[in-house]
Image (cartoon, rainbow, N blue to C red; front, side, top):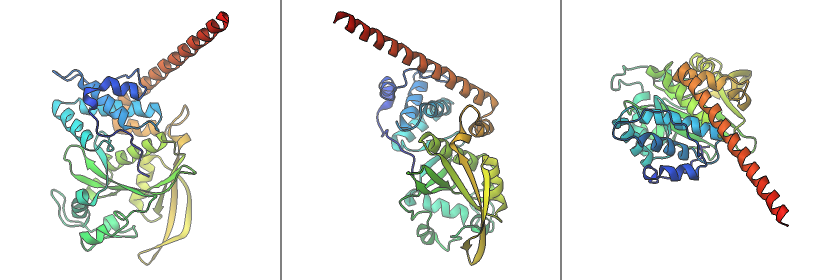
Length: 331
């Protein structure tokens, strides 16, 4: 289920043009600010992100993701150094404006996930009832870290994946988001509502985490992303609406959760609703996260790059036809 990554920790900073060539993007439109004393940084950042998306995603996704990553890196010399080093360590991370997603690992994330969701006061967060986080789930609250480690969060099936949501500024773990029921044959998958501390409910962090995953999944060719929610879970229902998911149905007596009946609501997003000429879901979320100006600029850049691609293909076809005609004339 984990989004495909084909680029390893290479020395791409020293070989930007080589990566462009390898990934077949000869017309990149960079949009980040030029850093004083490091004019090449914006191109290197774009190259890293574009290559890191892998060859199995569509080109518009790679370009859009690379532009956003480039802008993030080029905010300052410190930001450029930070994200360059992160890429060299973990090129598979998915980076957004306020959060990034890391493959969930017990060694790196268990302690903090337990600390921020157990209900005890943690850093600047006040104590809370742990059932605010775990009440509608089939697992949790946990007595200790060992119990959390033994739960489905860390003990995943072959068709599941979990990602830690990390705040880009504080480097603190915000929560976790999970993918289940990956069906490569039918290109469908289930996205679970993010598990986050109460202080993060209603913020941009869980929204962007899901946007990053959904954008990558649709770019990989998935046709349908589903979210199943307890009918009594008001916060998750609001979250699904904020994501722009479509409510499809209710399944009565769908599950038994903590010795109680659960009616489940089924929400979904289709690839045809996510992007395309008449689709608005991706643009709606992109605008919510990055602003109208950024969304307009992203659309314009995609249109420009697609036009260049079409012209390049047309010229190549013309040259091939002329070459074939010349060879026939010689015969």
